[in-house]
Amino acid sequence: MQRRIAALLGADPTNAAEVEAVAPLIVITTTGDRVQDRRLLEIGGKGLFTKEIEEAMIEGRIDCAIHSMKDMPALLPPGLCIAAVPEREDPRDAFLSPGAERLEDLPQGARLGTASLRRQAQSLNRRPDLDVQMLRGNVDTRLAKLAAGEADAILLAYAGLRRLGLGDRVRSLIDPKAVPPAPGQGALAVETREADRDQPWVAGLVCETTTLCVAAERGALMALEGSCKTPVAAHAWLDAGALNLIVEALSPDGRLKFRRTGATEISQLADPLASARDLGLSLGAAVKDEAGDAILL
Image 1 (cartoon, rainbow, N blue to C red):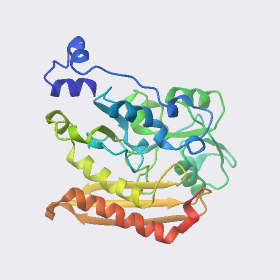
Image 2 (image 1 turned 90 degrees about the vertical axis):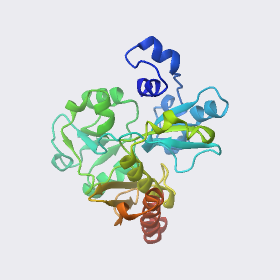
Image 3 (image 1 turned 180 degrees about the vertical axis):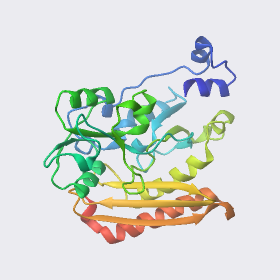
Image 4 (image 1 turned 135 degrees about the horizontal axis):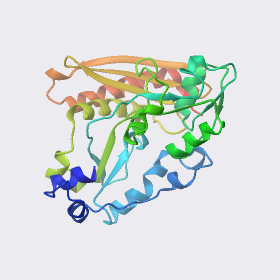
């Protein structure tokens, strides 16, 4: 992404020195990155992956931030915005195990490692016998824990594995229509100050299809007030001019599942982005009305 931004700013993307001069990379380690022994919901939620970065942007120390969209809270600090959503990677969850091909193949009472409340709830809905273990850390750490026998299987975002060149570690991929991923999974968010959202280089990063799908998914997230304490899933896709959306929320123990599906004809609309967001808000509100407090931890 650094090379792509530098190219849009006029630099030669093959010249490392020129790229660094035009779009210098500033690495900021967040609280969410540092604390690895507790679930995010215990230490403040997914905003801990963005707080320090957003403070740096507000103070003018950086001009934009690249986030994993699924880590973005439903609401952003005043003055900041998601200015661009580039083309999405594969949104599916990946199943990894030394001895099983699928979640359904795990033995009775097997240990499943995940730090995601959504993945926990969805997995227990499918396999209530599983022993779900909290497993945090970066991808390499989680793979090492799996290899060391700390879990019989783990679930990770396939997009992250592909970006790290580890896609071959996957035993199987989970159907996103049967078991939807996190809203925005597989997509990146380019966050800027509101004043910078119309810069030409920002426009060059936008993928219209991904932007519409993510708008629908995050609309559902907002309607459900999604956080690390609410197991929320959403999957949107375009097909023949129609934007389709599945929204799902579960009780944390996986016993209860609430699901809505819908579609809107994007090709005939004057404001497709607003329509996509409204679809998500509508389906999310319907799920919330039915579920009530059952989906809260």
